[in-house]
View 1 (cartoon, rainbow, N blue to C red):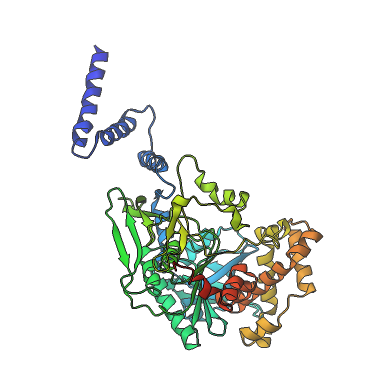
View 2: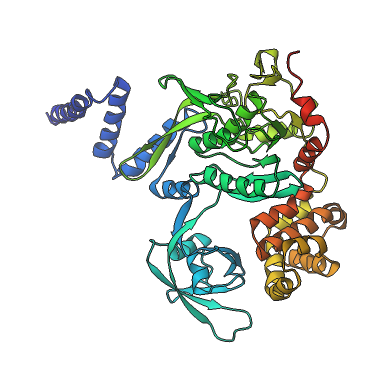
Length: 531
């Protein structure tokens, strides 16, 4: 009799959610609801229902494509900050060195600079809570420094040459996150702009930089998208608009339920005529590939570097009630000539190991290792040049990855923090002297040399961090080590712009771009169309 009662009770409990779910969706959806109901109500132990549902969502998305993902509320906030172009905090660039927060640079005109915090200051306490020497994580420190705009935070500062700690009260404000790393005249009449992501302020930053360079006589432009993983579609469209003519297609999207959407240039861009070279590499993705593909397809400029990543799936953000989010792929990006940017991700391909496979197959070192079937051939829109689909943007000029200077010894110096630690110590001990000696970056760039004494200290720091010295590898990497140290010192004395001005002297793709502009290669390449 008891068994009969249990069966009746179960039948009733199953029936209620099943009936309620009939208006919600398919049989599969009703099945899922019933399973979740059964586990939460009948399982032998109490379960965390929220965690259960979260894990189910993650497992479902894993069956789709590599870019359909789930993010919890905290991850959503962190993910959006770089793209939205700002966060609220005190406005300092910093490095953690020996359990102490060292201010690299206060943000120009930011809240910390306004109250007198200087580069080289050490923040040792926040609101009377010690953050130095207590093994606190960088994330925990950032939580203490960030806060709502208008709120105040007390900082205890130790400054070199000042005996007693200094107390500053900083009023938090919106801090810009710039998507443009560098902008300068790389040679007479040629400007260089590097963009690290496509965010809400990218188009505005680019226009400002371009206007400044044009005033300095810029006629040609090298646009560096190496390592740029993408961002907002609108930002990519706005940037491509700077180069293309009116009603020229920039990109289109299309999916199973998402109808085709075309995005066109308005024809009001400020750089529609000068020579243009775009630099890409294996980490260039998404929005960067939209810009590169549009420029290549319209024969507007030349692409230099290595085949881009191949991220051409469109995600729609779906906000969930608790602040979490699903980013669900709903369509694909296509270049103006109809090339799908997305690389394969079916069961025969290990998507996450694609770049390793490219390296193993020799693609990153030799263009001859790259083979495309004729079915992937398409012609550019104006000149009818042959370009290829199949995932990523294949450059017009291939530049192999430079492995000659990279060694395990150098990688370990970087990975163990020896390079950064040396730079911080050197700057802290010589900042005033360097500032007095080099009033302008140009003087520093011309005259400053990383000498043997500096290198000896670096090796000592490396040894202390567990990096065993290797003479052969050291000599091989020495040119790169010297350039890197000089660049980091320049960054700490000035900003990221000066860092790239130093590092770019060793970048093979940039050297190739300059070679193309300084010869007749540019004109020859863009005349190789149908005769």
